Image (cartoon, rainbow, N blue to C red; front, top):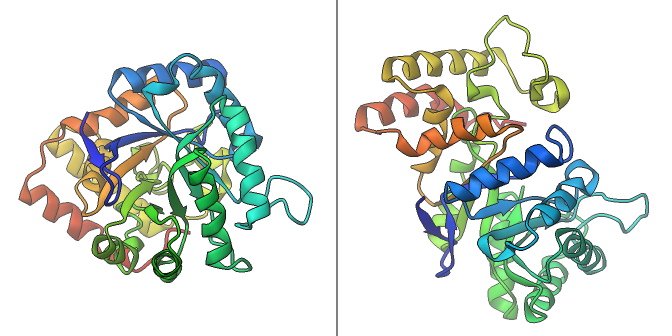
Length: 318
């Protein structure tokens, strides 16, 4: 497994990371452990979760599964989502992020996280408050590096400026949706990250499963698929994107590959990518994703996929 630098640090993360979104929901504890075992055997070190995944069950399951082998992974989690009914149970405030981190550490059965991510940009909280809270976490040894997720480029830029001006901890990575059906990141966020030495950790590299090969225009989603269990994804399965997925399947068949492997391999080759997060509900799905590491890319294939997905630069996935 290739390992890449996280932003402009010397710290390295696996090119493919394991996303824990399904753990505790579409994948039970036993399935999650089996998936984790296979991921570690394949050389994946980055394991990413969040306190909002499956009502915090994802963190609990990973905490149990990593007992005795915490040092084998780069463990990442996120805070900032709504996790309670109280008025302060969400957001990027000092109050909420510190409480959220402590809860994540308890559930994950560890005393530190390698990477802690602010899950969403908070329109009501200033960058200095958020960054000073993250600074305190790093100074206390509870967090090694910090990341922003779902931030517009201008918020990332302003946060970097605040870090430089105030001498506060700096975002070393940005988590963003990036796939053949969602290239919006290329408009502003990717150029900013390349210029400022910030790594990109891509999530939804298969467009919420759209590019896996199991969806087709005019056909019902397969039973148990994310399009049925999490309707937010099906709302984005437009006719245009379904047609793109169909054309991707044709290209994959010509190459003797799976559409998912081609889609992941394409994201891995985009500028500035530190890691690409892949999720799974079964070991077999993870095996399919791992195929992307063996895809032989050439200029013709890159041009095909770039051309196929060109319009996706202008149409946000969500």
